[in-house]
Amino acid sequence: MDAWRRRPDDGLVYWPALGGRSLAVFGDIHGRDDLLAAAQARLDAVAGARGLRPLEIYLGDYVDRGPDSPAVLDRLIARGRERETVCLRGNHEAMLLGALDDPAVLRSWLGWGGDATLRAYGCPLPRDQEPAAADLAVLQQHLRRALPAHHRAFLAGLPVAYTIGALLLVHAGIRPGRLIERQDEADLLWIREPFLSSTRDHGLLVVHGHTPVAAPDFRFNRINLDTGAVYTGVLTCLLISDRSIEVL
Image 1 (tube, helix red, strand yellow):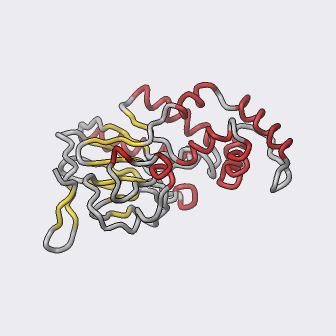
Image 2: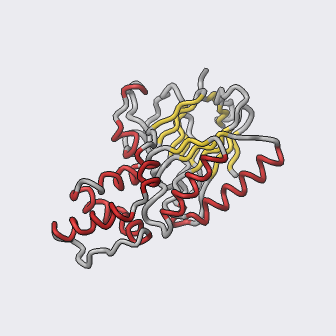
């Protein structure tokens, strides 16, 4: 079934084809545990009032830039014990994992907001903006010791995509024109163009984050839920069913 159909007034009506299920999809969190807690509480209140038990899907980028990445991971892990959840990998989780073993990734990650995560884990940061190899090696050892085993296992087990009904959920997007099953992981985690400007029907409606927007961006072939929580204080959760798509 098509993921969407166009009305005569040029508005959009989506057909997620969920078979009666409901989804709650969360945009990029980036260390804002306070916003995640508030969004989950809001979801619980709405779902409880309506008798719903939605599958919760988190689109990645739980760490970096914000002040409390470890608490975000703890909250997501605990939530997964209480609810049905799918947590996807974002490019920032991929960088954190890479930084554990590759000094070049660690150096790059520092400039992508990894310094906030290191600080939250109690790792001493190098004083130089361009740390020497020896300083990076020391920092790497601190990170390996500071990152709890259950956090590392959680990060290592994150899938890069999830398909349900007529929806494809990924962190960043897809390479237009390439079959879904042949997508490159780097694109799923990092792509912006040519995905964002593509007017192709991808076959599935792509729900993604990664690129901050002022408000949820609804297109005929994709929905962007990254509302820049770490900068704006707005974390978006989208409640999706066969009957409606609603921003909580």
